[in-house]
Length: 292
Image (cartoon, rainbow, N blue to C red; front, top):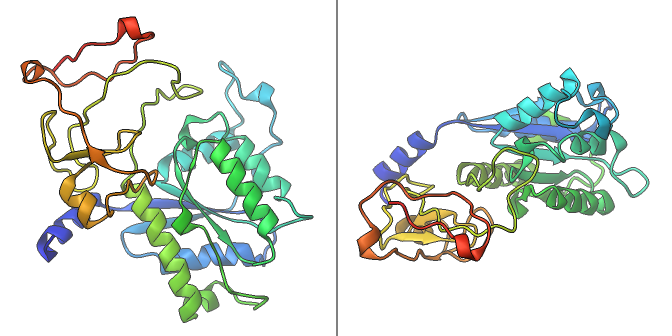
C-alpha cells in the first residue's frame, strides 16, 4: 500500500476515544499518573479520557441491575462513557494480592451491560511485583467477554521510581512502552467487529446461523460482495480483504488472533438479490436460506 493510500485509510478511520480507568483513589497514585502519561502521549487522532469518578459508583447490587429498573445515575454515566469509547485502558495497584474493591465494583456494574461486550481493553501494570492483581483482572475481563489486547497489556520497568505523568511521558523507555500499548489498543479498536449481538443481556448462543457475508473490509472499507474472491474471515466472521490481511495483519485476525481464511462463496444462482441475511434460526431443520 502506497503512502497516499495509507493516508486515505487514516482519514477514513478518524478519531478514536479511549477511556482510562485507574484502580486507585489516591490523589498521588502512580497508576493514575501512568494513565495521565498515556493521555499526554496520545496522537492528535486519539482522545484519552481518564475516568475520575470511580468512588462515585455505589456498591454493586444485582437487584438494581435488572430489566425495568434504571441503574443509579452515576452507573448510567459510567456505562455511557464505556459505550462511547473505542477501547479501555486499566491500570491498578495490588492490595493483599488482589484487585482493589473500587475497581472490581466498577467492573461488576459492567458484567451485564452490553456496552462492555467485546470491547478492546489493555492492562497496564505500574509495578512488576503486582502480578496477582494483573492476572485476576485479566481473568475477570475474559469472563466478561471483553477483548483483552495482549500487546496493550504491559508491565512498566519503573521499579520504584517516583515519577509523575510528565516525568513518565519524558522518559524515552517508558514513553515508548506506553505509546506501543496505546497503538495496539487503538489498532484493535479501529479494527473491532460488531459481533452478532442484540444489545440484550447476553450474546446469542446455541443457534444455527448462516454466514453474514459482511459487505466490506473492516480495515480499508473495500467492497466485498458475497462472491468476492478477496474476502477473508476468521471463526467469528471478522472480514478483511486479502491485501489488508497480508499487508497489515500477517494473515491473523486483529480482533481475536485467529487465522484468516478465504470466505466460502455461495452458489452463483443465489447471487444478485437482497443483502445477505444475519437472522438466527433455531435448529438445523430451520436453517435460513440465503436471501441475496
